[in-house]
Length: 331
Image: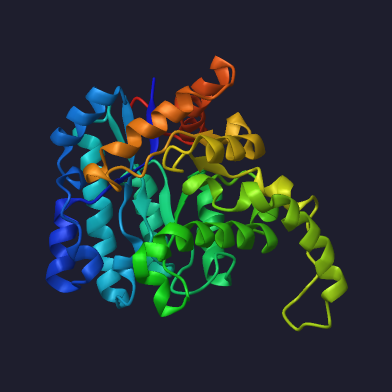
């Protein structure tokens, strides 16, 4: 069994609605029919031996600058479309709903995602209109998701940066993994994982910089006590364990573009119980056809027991979905 835990989609109805009412270069660039053509997608999955995909909405930047009434309407269209895609082939697809921001209307949408649409989780972004994920506006979402045992996928969003970061796609090359790192850090240092220890977060790009810099996080956490008072925004970190212990609670996809060294680094840190096959399909070269096979090959080449490989390829995502009320084989 092979399940892609982080594969992108864009319902055709959402794309049409966004281009009609809130057009942007980000939305206009969505021309890859794999995003909405399930028959074409299934043919490639069969060729690669992928049994099932978790469908996660594409292109977070297309929500930037959107007014709230438009966002509310388009969010419903997005979630309806994602639910329809999963329902069309429940044995091959499951979908994750999306919440591009947080307010009372979108909190109600979280309830609809779970109860009416019965989606497998919810997608949020690494920052919410410039606010960190431990901002007080986000806590009602965590409270409701924890109560419902609804897993949360995190996708990078553009953050504050220099204009030249967009050249040569550096914003996506290094900026997005860095955004993931910052988001995970705010969830840890902001106390979200302390308050909701059972809440499941799924990250993109194998947790960004976390596997490489977790030791530095532990050191700087201890250092913060020495700087408290001298710098106004530095406060002692009050956690019951080391930051690295919290970072290991995240679940993380294998989207490091087939790099064996990066995959091993992430696996060594997070452990086989917190790494899942995920591909970013259909992003990347050859209309997205290249990375799923490369990443699958890199997972198969790992020098690990077969039981660990099975966890990565399907066991971990099955466990996450079974925690709530979703069965990986459909309802």
